[in-house]
Image (cartoon, rainbow, N blue to C red; front, side, top):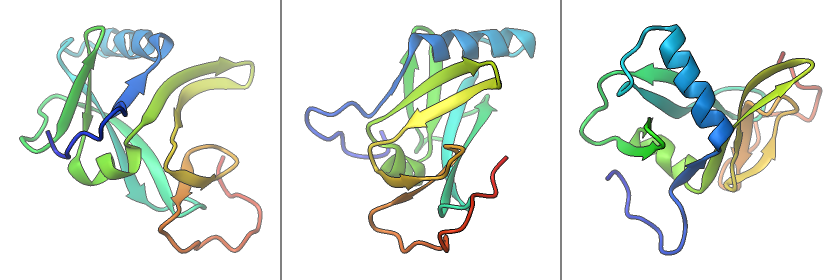
Length: 133
């Protein structure tokens, strides 16, 4: 595992709805069931950091991996520090659907929910309107 497990705290969790959506996407794309969903954090977005997801057929040796009801989640060691304790969900509304991440490490998030800032970062966002779409 990439990082020492913190006592009494789940590394990451995922809702049953998100698990089923990932299974559906794997089937639609004709990807093997063992293909993982890589969840990562990158610099950018209007709050400083942004979430990303991609299918991962070959996790690296230092990746954290977890399996939920047959779905593999893969997180690189750097992203794991930002995502520790987060919950992945899939929300389908009249305006569209998508994955969402409830992240206890985020002290502020963008209106779209795809970017965030943690307590240790200086804000690069000047307080104006979010540019996310």
